[in-house]
Amino acid sequence: MRIDVHVHGSLYLHKGVTLAQLEAGLRQWLEYLDVENVNEIRSAEPSEPGVIYDQSARVLDICWTGEVGRSFQRTLQQTLQSIGPLLEHASEIELTYYHEDGRDEFQLLFAGPTAESIHQAQRRLMLEDVAGLLSRHFAPAEVGRVTTLVNELFDRDWEQRAAEPEAEFQPSGSLVHFRGKKHLH
Image 1 (cartoon, rainbow, N blue to C red):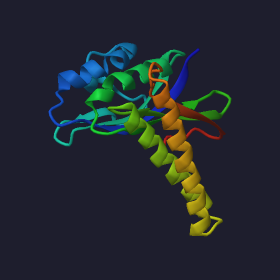
Image 2: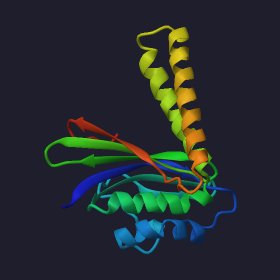
Image 3: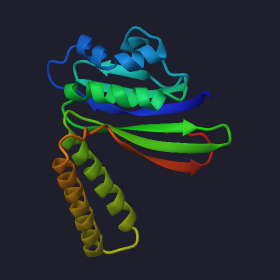
């Protein structure tokens, strides 16, 4: 079964990372797409740039849509794990799956140089989302109480992960289902 997916995000690379190192980190995705290098990754949507590596800014910008199979998400997660050590800091990558029945699925994946940096990126994004939602209805003091609780939850989660050293930290994500029309941005 094939499905359309849109991948969007920016990954910021350490100073000194070469194109060869970047492509080695992207190897699984490149093989999945049956292309040789990052410059060959083209989006199915003509208005999208695909995958662009700006060496002077040390950023890999992704705005790519394509038809994928069931193993795509696993391939992308493995790719993000491989590229993680090359990154300056953790970032999120958005995936949107467009189903034929009109249902969209939205997922966030995270990549970063360390498990802790990924955890902190997840925390930052959650705090932004929670504060944004609550501030529409509640005063700053009430929003602050909830964000303090969210911070405590993330602290406890990190302590539990640290207590299980043999458990490998994977670039994780969350999946949200939406119903609606296909949209790219």
